[in-house]
Image 1 (tube, one colour):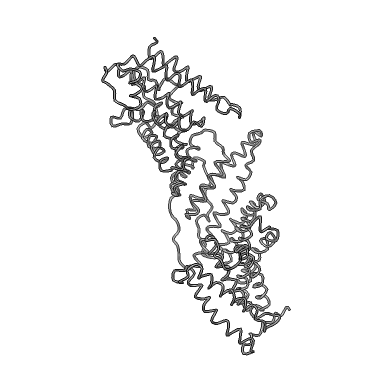
Image 2 (image 1 turned 30 degrees about the vertical axis):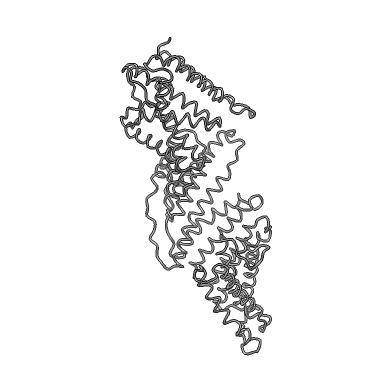
Length: 605
């Protein structure tokens, strides 16, 4: 019988090499796992051969040896025999792990999980137990890999806490090792170790680093599913940083897309500095990708990732639009909010290897006056317009409408800083024109959500214009005209939300706030439209206002019959007051006791 060292150097490596070649084979779709299943058979046969050939070299039988591997007690043996026995056990554990990993890939999940768990239990007991020993690098990689696979399996089953347990073990293993061995060099002892036979230490170190990227990636997924957005974002940033630092090939378009999405999270936290670094990095990596494509035209054949460039334009636009929004909100609230001075995320800081350009001087500046607001506007709007060239209406209806709404919001927030009311009206015109043009083309049945969004937005725009014209004592005919358009769009929104059931039933909770707001604004719009420019005695708009106010009171009863815990108490109180005030006014107009104010005369008319 061959000596153990010869057995490792010849038979063991030959078995692994054969399996590695099988794993590389691309099987036909009809038998997608044929080669992997053959590799599994070879590993299982070699596992049995190892037990049959070498269990007798210790004082334990083959059955007892395998029992030890599974965690059961065995009888005492000589030091030399036990040393060789442990080496045999290590090979058995390695074979079990490799077989289990292939079984998982071949969708034999239950079998794979059992084998990996057994192997992991042995390796952790041997090297990470109370009497912790120096872990051979190859063994470290397998422990790390095993925890990653088990973490992935539990993640796929939506058992995210169990997945976290394995992935955090893998992370700790890597961090402990790198702290103890900054250069990640292996420590070779005397004799031959089964786990140091395969390849050089550099290969194992490379695998260790790749596994850690996977650990970080899945931890980002786990924390995302657990609703822990901050942790998910940090691990996502770390994954992207590790890909950069590895020097390995990675999909640059996908990297840029992920970085841009990550910027959205930091932007939601008003962390403008980190968001900007994310977008700048995405821009740099995507630009490098485009340059590489020019040099090698065949590299990206069959894959269209041109949407990534458009999404980066969107990200830049949203960055400065959010600053303008924050400034507008502070004007409305009259409360000064201190700027976010938090440092750039530690993981994102690692992206500085890209040598990014310095941020724009307006980054993080929350506008307090029109000039600063216009600067933010001018930084955001060109990016939105450029993105709209890609996301054209013909082919990208949803994306195009979303961009129109972004532009509308941008004008809305800029108008808050504009002191001149006429120029405010011009900005609202700029909001309405493109929206009305597309709204007329939308099929409300096919694009129901977009139809509702646009109808509500247009109703708000024309109600705002009506209030501005009334505030500046413009001719009532102009006030009336804006109100009439607001009524059209508010009514379209309300009808779309109510659907075929009509009024009298409670709408979906997700739409209730905007639905109630639309009806309340519609009632107020009707009220402001009186008197009719063509017939000052016509009270139909006051009647419509009264009807809407009464309808809102009834709707409030659907939400809370007792009227004590209603979230719309303030609005409902106004509705009750108007229901008391409007009937006498309507009656007074009918009897001639109330004469509408004389209308202003427009000198141009």
